[in-house]
Length: 393
Image 1 (cartoon, one colour):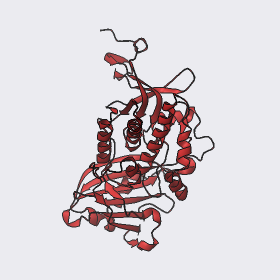
Image 2: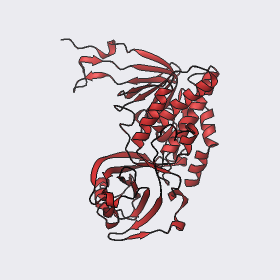
Image 3: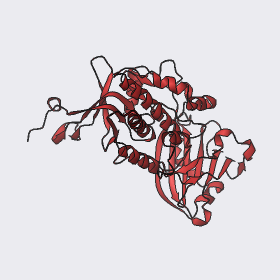
Image 4: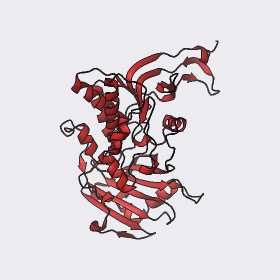
């Protein structure tokens, strides 16, 4: 059977006002805010979200603390809508560990970034699934199981959309008889919300030199496990952070342990990827960390039910690239808006998604397309999020 020629097969295309790449908190907030604005103005706007996972939330590691500030701006009635923010933080602990002991920091000495009063311990996967339901109810089209594999450019060099990956490619890189070309999604504006070190985001930063004049970006790896705790040891709402052992004083990192609802505990370990010891294994250090008496006591008698790891963009405000380019914008961890000192990024992703949506909606109303959304970085600089990141830099 003859094999199809990739170059000879034309890709089908679909047209939207806005295409969003990534159905995480930032991407879904972008899509939802666009639809909210369209409803308020009595206008129609077509919005599509591409998600590489089998469903929104499939690639989100469960277990996080979320500051509800941005979510409250997006949905003031999120409680009535049934948002899965159920377990409020009840207590904060910060421990400095050595090999066998732990010294607790008095609460009055804790920096503000470690005060979590008013925040919630959540399954971020559940929050994302809930956001996707709100988006679809608003008329957003979500295509799950399709990864954006290529940025598309128009004749002027502006981003005109993305293409999904080809299917039916053999191990030799050649098309098989099941070959199907990817789909092109064209848009007046394309918003990239792939998360930390997104494949297409890195390409855009390089092509448009968005990081010119900025500090080099820095990264960490966060390894996380979800445990079903021994009921006798579960303390709903307890938040524990640690520094020190098993890392030496020259290696950036620390840990977190959250007692969530339903008897679950999330435990995680972060290591900066600039560590100097070539023999250091972040995974093995995490496993050693769990044997410390101050940590072991939370987990003994429990069962690990999930695990994973994620890159973390930790450079902060001075490493943020330019957020816009002809035809689109970067939001959330794609840009690097995580607040490393607070170990929180979901509220930043939601807020930047909303700001990008507001800029795109205004531009569409003026009949513009594929230019720079200059109102977005300006709004960001005047936002509470910028002030928060400025304080932590």
